[in-house]
Length: 351
Image (cartoon, rainbow, N blue to C red; front, side, top):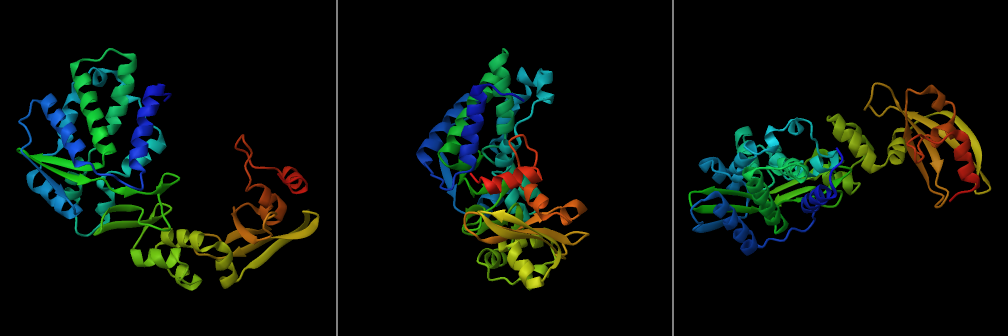
């Protein structure tokens, strides 16, 4: 879907909030906006505000009262937008959805201390619970005449987004008592939870979650992999195939293959920076596929460092032609891989 520039800017605001590595928390500004929301809803004034430091405390409070701010979505059900067929066909970008999902309570669902129902209830208390509808209704109202419910919903969601920009992550109200919780820190790479230096998702000191390329690890294993204290043998013995595959990627295929040994299938020589260099296709069973893995061994023309690039083990033409295998790891602007001749040209005239 091609969004209006104003909608695009709104999505960027949300993404910027979701991917901050430092979260400010301005209680005064947050409460000011939540009181404004209560005025719109015609609710009684807030008499007390409680800030939860721990996620468990907040989640169990939510579970016991079951009175979250997700009720604000009621206006969207009666909006002019919801009556339009456009609502069934709209979609946000995958990048936005990935960052949006990162702020839900998904991470805590992996913790044994939380039940499925508790996770669901705490998720509904997320300040961005309705942000996807926010995007759709905002875009629709730029091009169509909305009703009073559209106006109220958009006004409420804008105030909630401002609360999030001031550090709010979760909230619910029990009678006239408002409970709030700071937003988590989320680190992502290529729309996947990932960090080799910090917890990928940080709620508080008791709720930190470690991910590498979208795969969850316990802290001890994550540290061994990122600090390279794990051995290739230990990596190969990991029972979880996703963890094993990611661990090999982070640790380095070259070190794994060196440790396990590999079978050379073919080799070719080529001039690189005026000197002959020998490329090789190496095969080794990493036990992460039905067939052994294959790599092409190449030399970096700027650093002279040797490294391995993983290639398609089912393409026999690559197994017999290392130069073609290397060429296919480079992609042209049109999305197609380089040909063998194009790659040779790069070696003669590197840029």
